[in-house]
Length: 86
Image 1 (cartoon, rainbow, N blue to C red):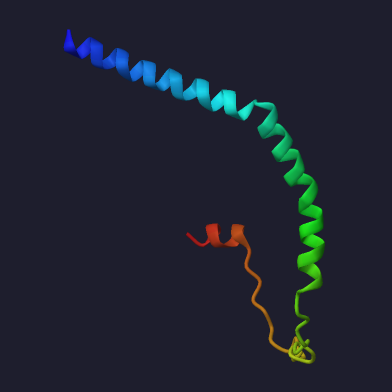
Image 2 (spheres, rainbow, N blue to C red):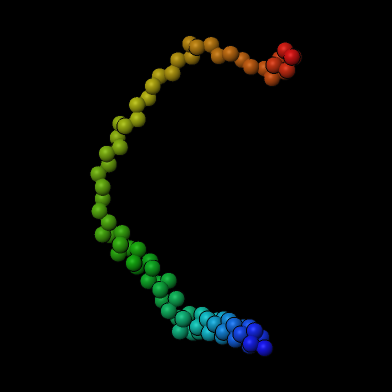
């Protein structure tokens, strides 16, 4: 008997949690606040980008190119010839 009451209590708590969460999420006040914050994001990004410091570019002439020569002969491998040597 006590076990069934405990399970009933848990189920009621879960249902109440889902109900109040859905009620708040779909309320007009929450929807208005979310749309207002979406509109303000662009302005916040513009304000933040104006205050960003510009860093000096120190990556010029960092890559050194090495001339590759093809003087080495590469050994050609043939798959079928490797099987024939058995």
